[in-house]
Length: 130
Image (cartoon, rainbow, N blue to C red; front, side, top):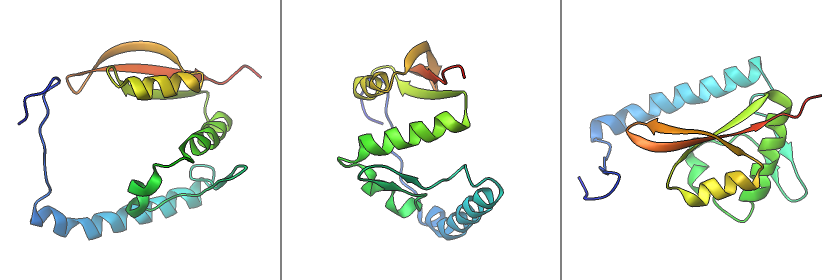
């Protein structure tokens, strides 16, 4: 345990846990394929001026941070706007960078509270009335 506010603990997966990853990842792949087949709009391919967004495998999540992040976020929010009435952002209260980014997408603070014993903010974007 580290001395930090809020308190922080670091965990690492054991060898036994690592041995369970291949079947778990197989189930995740099956679930993604099954859900996409049932609801193609759930994991769509989105195209923007300089970016092509497609469903990704977990193995490439780490490489997703780049200059294209803003365009990727805009494509995903535009798609969400066609699928849901409200987009929710759950952001740590002290995560000012993410809170500012959410505000730039026109998200408005809805409420604050505790989540997993940590202070959080819930912001939302409502779909405009038709």
